Image (tube, rainbow, N blue to C red; front, side, top):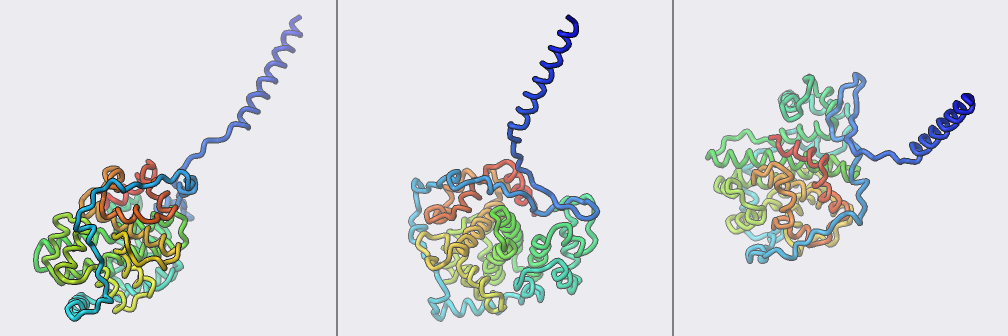
Length: 380
């Protein structure tokens, strides 16, 4: 009798074990979306933006539409037309020449930094030729912005640890720095806002491009940085322009004020400087059109789909940087639900939004991605 009981218990146990194993095999593992970190040979964590993109899991069906039809448009916004350098009147040309000639010449490293994609050793050899930029880059990467546990002691170390794109952005940012003395404190403060906004836009552009699996993320980041070139040049020449940044005016209001006062705008000056400095043609054209997505009727019909995606990424990154730095809203949670009510985003949403950009805006509601964005928005 005892043998039969033991045998029954054994059979029942085996049967239960088989059922448990089958259930475990058939139950799919829950996917976890986490940022995967690279490691160096010494196993230190790399803080560069290298992770499994969340956008892979977002289909076109999950990308919601952004309705802006209920926005009440001010008359000044409806009537806004962008001036172009093709107008070519005497007054405009004199203003362009005055600004281009008075604005300081670019740092010698700016041109080579914009001309190609770099291998780590190439970027290292380029930056190390200038001790001042080298020192500024190393100081930057060791600041609280990156919260490193161990100090970085060389450009090569910084490239291996942070990645080519991040180090290149920092070097270009300092290459655009203006050490000139400003006429007023307001002018200096406004310039610092623009300088910080340009770097934030380039960092956001790099993050967005990598999330959207863009092969030339570094190029997009460079475009974002240079999109503020016109603002910086105009402000450096005309101190009174500082008030539109100090008063936290939106982009369309800044454009209207600039065109009314000077008969030019920032994309005219930015592209003129880029052309004068002999920057690559693709960058000149990108700067030349960086305000085009502000208005509904623009001249971008001949732009191919891939280039339009870059324009929309850059425009989004720059407008988020504006909100964070110029309008002092350094938190994605405070700005994301209001984007469809922001007139600077009106035409972007009103026109054909690239599917990848829809996915990107949806990601603004993802906790992990929002945390990554806030990490950039809060750093100055």
